[in-house]
Image (cartoon, rainbow, N blue to C red; front, side, top):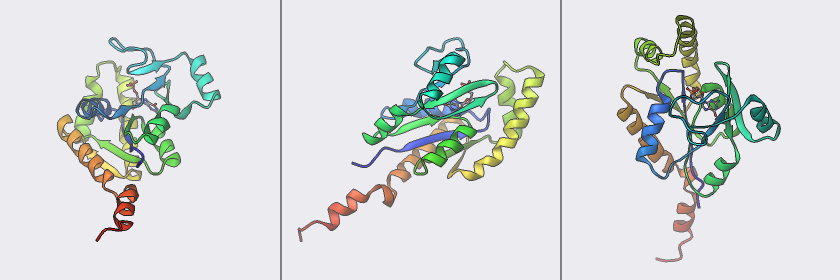
Length: 204
Ligand code: 5GP
């Protein structure tokens, strides 16, 4: 059996990674979402073990010491990490795994897992990016300016990914990612068994 796909959706802050990933998960029920761990506090409506594993800094450090993370990074003063073991288990079973992580995290995963599918989400314009960061509503003017500047700086990193998807509408972005997944499944390198079966056939 071929291994599942490791699909990494990443992009600058405010490009709507979370919303696009929610849409993908709703539309592809077999996709396994890797729940990250974080030291940030839960927002209203978030549940431990659903959106994130919410850890104290001490617990997070213990997970690092125990080698539980595939990658971890500090994002705006909080720590975030991708637990490793479930991902490998699922991929081995042939299941596709979705990671929604920041750029530093994605670059770390890229170094460890070069056969993953790395998708960079782009905002349709800088104006739209600015609106999206503002509309989060939680930003003070200083935080907004810091996030916007850093988001613009992060966009260049996208040149290191394999796929660029403009998030003009959530539906269109999700459709494009579904097309990427379908194409990735058809890669010759992922279909060795098909070739083997056909070329070893004794019939005809
Ligand atoms: P939020 O706190 O708004 O849920 O997420 C903040 C940022 O952390 C987002 O850019 C999100 O993609 C990123 N993030 C979430 N989980 C992880 C993770 O496991 N590793 C890394 N490196 N970033 C993450």
